[in-house]
Image 1: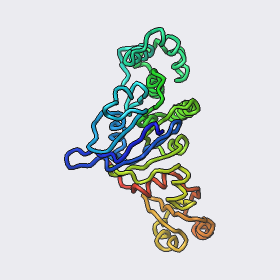
Image 2: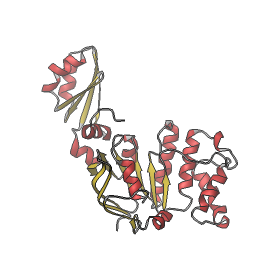
Image 3: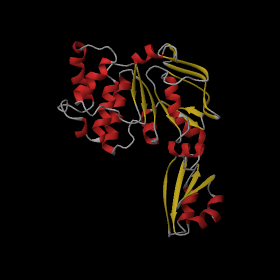
Image 4: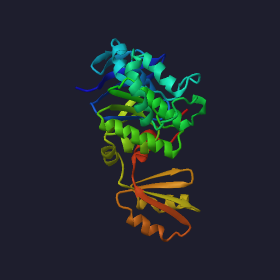
Length: 303
């Protein structure tokens, strides 16, 4: 039985359909990513799954409970890391955890041994009496993750968990999330970092304009949606080269700013051609999830 099952989910605000007939299922122990440009419907879908807003149509089951009717009971089995930290600046690190534990009816006897373990998990040992204002952005994000684990949830919802963090903090959170998966936790996350989705997720669903447009493992999504290799070409005259030479050598070409992205199954003929143009520089690499994402949703900026 799926930990989270969504069937024909729909939500509109006035004439705007923010979630359009979305269906998916997430099994126990999976880490599933929900990807999409700004305004694609990701956060609305998470809020619907948590019972925070009511759907206009469709059905949701979370941890065995029908949502939104059973949302209060389901949320006792769920941890949530919101997109923006909402720690209480008037409390210390320890007090933030204790106060949050009260929402789940957890006693001090239960929490006394649990809090040191959570602080160790978050890399915040020795900071239990620190003021929230004294913590770095990475520390606050790790504390928010530790707080989401206060009730030992079976399911974790993470809305862009590493946005705004430096690479060191991001990698530390990735390590902690992998550890949670080995413990059997089910993780649902939204992210704008394609590398994050590739590293963590057993399956990724791509949304755009409220609709689900792909839902596969990262490897299968790359294999099914895009050519095997990408050659990024830039330098003086790259656009002329892309118009006159690349069409005979590449299956697909994208021009973005000062770079031509050439998608090929085999890069050797294109690279041989580029050797005749010393003013051009290039990078040859395997296609990745970011290339798939841009193919499916486009390169236009979204507000």
